[in-house]
Amino acid sequence: MPGLGVNGIRTLGGFISIPPNPTMILRKADRSEVSAIWSILQQAIAQRKRDGSDQWQQGYPNEQTVHDDMEAGYAYVLVDNDSVIAYAAILFDNEPAYETIEGRWLTDGSYATVHRVATSDQVKGKGVATRLFTMIEELCLGQHINSIKVDTNFDNGPMLRILDKLNYTYCGEVFFQGAPRKAYEKVLSVK
Image (cartoon, rainbow, N blue to C red):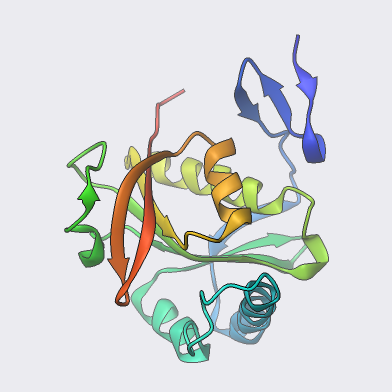
């Protein structure tokens, strides 16, 4: 029998089923939302510092990164009742840093890459990042992309827990901006 887990997330035989929230929408970001996105990223940068991590502490990401994501078409926001509550850069192009891996990817075909995931401090601990990832998976399937690859810092506990919860597979290490990162992939199945 399904049980209600953390943050109202339903668990069904080891799989995560998050109840739909009709007020949450994942969509491409608008240029008018740059300041809201940058504010959320700054909150995430500060959190990484409080956690004792070096990740995102050397000037990346920065506001120019958000503008670059917009220009490239990678900038996505999760909005709830028209308020931006989370951000992610979603690339439907190949990520050059992923061409070399110390390990092995699960697939060799087309994939989406997720970078710069951040949620507003106002929604921390409410399952929003998990919801964001499930919506990214739905977006990918809608674009006929059946694989998502992501990397994260070795000490990014919250992201590592999300990837584990959503059944991403650890594939090895990639080097992103000169630093080693844990690399994960999830092969999506059409429901």
